Length: 88
Image 1: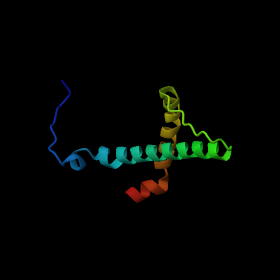
Image 2 (image 1 turned 90 degrees about the vertical axis):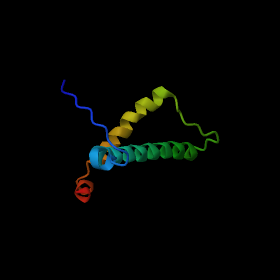
Image 3 (image 1 turned 30 degrees about the vertical axis):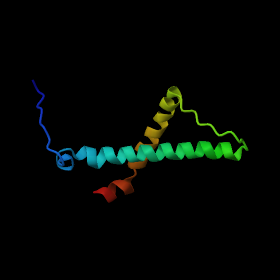
C-alpha cells in the first residue's frame, strides 16, 4: 500500500536517480579499482617469488571472501573528506 511505482523515461536516469549517478557509480568504480590493485599485487608477489607459472585463484569462494576487503577499501577511499569536498 505504501509503494508507488513510477516509470522513468529513457535518458532521465541522471535526473530521477541521483544515487545511481552520484554515489553508486563512485562506489562501483572504487570497488573496481580496489579489485584491480589486489589482483596486481597478487601477480606481482608471484613474479617476485620467481614462479614461472602464474595463477590467480578465481574460485567463487575465494572471490567472495576477498570481495569483503575490496568493499571495505572502497568505502574507506570514498569516505575521504577531501574527495567529498571536491564532489560538493
